[in-house]
Each structure stands twice: as structure tokens, then as C-alpha cells.
Length: 338
Image (cartoon, rainbow, N blue to C red; front, top):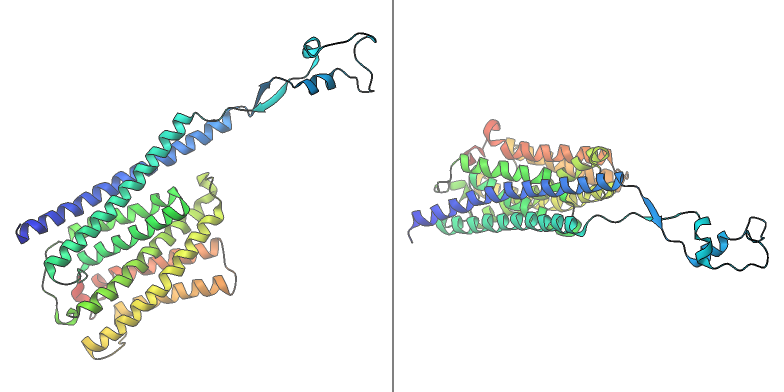
């Protein structure tokens, strides 16, 4: 199999990933919509319906308020004789049909499965491109976008497995789909590395830590949005769950972002002769790091939770996207990566 054929197979994998992510998003929407319909039906069905009384209740009903039998003295009554005098008892309404629940669960499994297969295909694409290029595929915006997608899907699948919060898919998967489409549009050709990038180990580590860090930041962003919209969403999951997911995402993103910046500084010393030069991309990464540092400080020291914490996480992800796309309008030494 020739190099062109292998590259074409890789591009098919990328296209299939886009399709699977869109299908997964659609199925998540179906599952969420079905769950809402079930909740609506349960709310409209009367909570209580008639039930047969017990023997003890029948006997209790045959006695008047002052303790005297309601019937004439000397006459014995069986429970069957006094059924009509007993007030109707209530019991819980029947549950939603098992078939409906099973159908919803099956759709959720398929939604998870399509997202997982998309992750596998993106991973396979990265491996194929790595083999063809002879180095980690992290040297231009196409490859950055693919690595970003890989980090988001990895974090998303872990969070879904751990917390089972389907609503996150509605906010996270559109970001994945948009990045995949962007990656295809900017071109998939493999080009030689510029001299500053010809350090395969540092290239892989620097961008690898960034990919997972930014992926965790994206999931935190999704959780923060859900937290703010919670009063309108009619969710059964407790609201604090999304506050917890946002916090844990930041706990993952911040140290990885720290390592990314340190590795970048070491690499800059090798490539450009200085550790830090206030290049626009470097400055944007530092601002992003400071936002997440501020969030964790406010959370741990000042006890920030809820709305204030969610707003900071949204600002943090906005800073991530600014740093990511900054190559297009900031210029500087990182401009070659466009």
C-alpha cells in the first residue's frame, strides 16, 4: 500500500469521525428529549389510584370514633360485610413502561458507542499521520486541531463513564465537530518541519500536554454552562454535580497546562535562545494559566462555588480558544504553525 493510499485512508477516518460525532450528538439529543417526555408524562399522571384495603383497615373502619362498634351489638361482621364503609386507599401510580425505558437506555448506549468509536478513529488517524510524517503530528493548525479533538474526546468519555451526565454531550460534542471540520478545511497535507520544530520529543510532549489540558478545559466549560442553565433544563441530576465536574476538570487542566508552559520555555531556549520572550502566543498561554490559577485559588481559599466559579471556567475556556487561534491574528514566532 503506497503512501498516498495510506494518507487517503487516514483522511477517510477523519471524515468518518465527523459523521460519528454528529450521529452521537443527535442520539444524545434524542435520549435527553425522551427522558424529558417521560418526566412530563409522570408529572401529568395522578400520583395515587385506588387500592384494595387490608383486613386491619377494614376492622378499624368498623369502629366509631368513640370506640364503639358501628353495627348493632351482638352481631358479628366479617371483613366482606363492611368493605363498602371503608374509604378508598391510594397507592403509587404505575411506573413508566419498561419498553420505553429500555429504548432510551439502548439509545444512550449507542450514543456513547459512537463517541467512543470516533475517539478510536481519531487516534488511528494520529498514528497513521505520525508514521507517514516520521514525527508527532503536532506541527500545524490541522494537526493541533486533531490533537485538541483527541484530548476533548478522551476527557469527555472519562467524565461520561464516571458521572453519566448526558447533557454535557450537547455542549462538548459541537466543539469537537467544529474542530474536526476546521481541521479538514485548513488542509491535510504533510509538510516538512521548520527548524524550530525539529525536536520530536519536545514537540510531542509540549503539544500532548496541551491537548489533554485543553480537552479537560472544554469539558469544564460544558459543565459550567449546564450549571448556569440548570434552572431551565429540568434535570434529575443534582446541580452541584456540574459544579463538581467543572472543578475536577480544572484540577486536571491546570497542572498539565503548567507542564506545557514549562516544556515550552525549555524548548524555546533550545530553538530561539531564550526561555521567555513575551511572544503573543506565550503571553496568551500565560493569561490562560493565570485564569485557571485564579479559579483554583478562589475555590480552595475563598470557597468559590456555583455561579462565580462557573463564570470563571467559561472565561478560562475563552482564553484557551484565544490562545489556540491566536496564530491567525497575533503573529510572533509561533505564526509558522498556521
